[in-house]
Image (cartoon, rainbow, N blue to C red; front, side):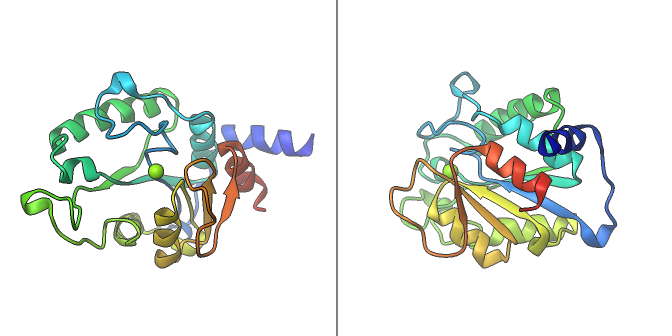
Length: 201
Ligand SMILES: [Mg+2]
């Protein structure tokens, strides 16, 4: 009962933290925000993962910034353009706003070291397992990474989160069949992450 009332309270209270204590909930996109569809580009194909909006509303209520960090190899491979990506994300951001949990930022990596076409064929610290997007988000929003949380669904997310020094890394079960290296907690639902944010476990 105590847990449930704490969870409810977190949705109605907006806490303002001092600038030095800013923290973020970093979210991978494919497989965490939306169900994995290979090279998603049309909004009609988006199916939101169960619990994503509840998680984000709770996080916002607790003062977390909401920052998306997504590899977009489909751009590198020429399957869709950066404009296509922005169009889809504009729609997606509208959905988050409507759900009462506007996203603060979306970072994406459009390159791939082997399969990229033209200028998109290159190594990048932004491409997970690189920590570039997390570090950029932290710098731009004055976020304390050690106090932040990252939810991904692949070992490359875990590696990126660990490399950036994110305090708590969650791996949503389903995609990776074997264990990942590094520090993380595997969860079966986004509600488990939500409970962690509220209870600080
Ligand atoms: Mg993913």
